[in-house]
Length: 468
Image 1: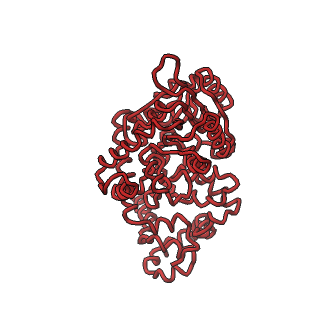
Image 2 (image 1 turned 60 degrees about the vertical axis):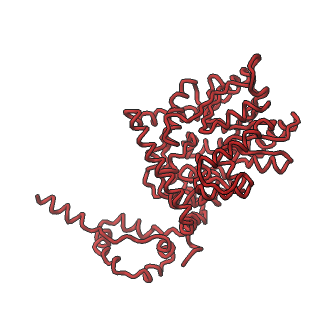
Image 3 (image 1 turned 90 degrees about the vertical axis):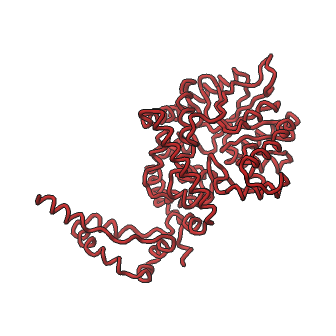
């Protein structure tokens, strides 16, 4: 069976364990059905909301030079300290310096995709700091020394039996795969850690440039505990998370819950205006907001800037037939699925060729665009990146790809195309051994089954219809 000529994601899908496939497929399918049910029940025209949200995000991206300084001024007026990090290393250093300057040794951390980009957890551990994930999925990933496979559900590739074994191994209780028991044990373990920690770190789903207000949505309430129990709150935020006005938050909080998990609203929606004010009994005494670029300005200047509208709901992953077949780890990057197939190669910068095969991980069915709450034209962006890979002769993008020259010739010559269609039925009688003589065909056939030829009848149908 050929493997060298296959794309990596094809090999990953072929070798995926059945129980992982079942976990990923079942979870994503159920969430997609829930999304449709809730969104179309609550709104007469959800597409209009998606288009409006997309226009607001695109407007914000095209005016970051206005909205970033506005957000900075508002945050400072609220008492927060604002920092700008050009890349992931700079962001990690800033966080370490804040901790050292305040004599801090430990951090409790809420879920943050930007911190996944920067590798913050491992960086802090390497520099003598304790860093504990408090999102249940991320906590399981941390104790298993694993990697998230989904933007919203990091352990989408695990089932409850896997998690029960991990908890038993870590001394969190005897083997018990009851979800409620697992959750209760995690809660008991984590609750005390909030009070022991010196720093709480969160991301932010949205930042209002008007008021400097951070919006954080979770379903576990762990972000609130991270901020309430620690004296220092650090928020690490991508520069694309801005929205112009507070009123925009009503639209985006309505869309992110329904799109990501099929909820009207996430269980906890917090609006953070700054550090603890005089007279308030709880809350952090310091609040630091670190805006991270990490090649986002390069993406903004590229022909794929629309991908920065993404609000990380994961809806495109849930509906994607390729993600369901291959799972998130097949994408070899922080961001999996259709959004990752666009964003990850772009954020890789000069390492684009290493991930240039990801834009090929799509059937271009368009489902990702249809469910996107900010109307990102993902199939168009994938095609632009395929063209970029072809232009730059990215070797990984070419693997397992049959040459399209013959197809292009046939498709542009009506007589040749018609002749080829009449011979198409012969494919049903051709043994795979003969088809597999062509290496790209062999690579394709090794993990897929060519459907029976059923074409060639349209012209006859059209002729008979014309006569009638």
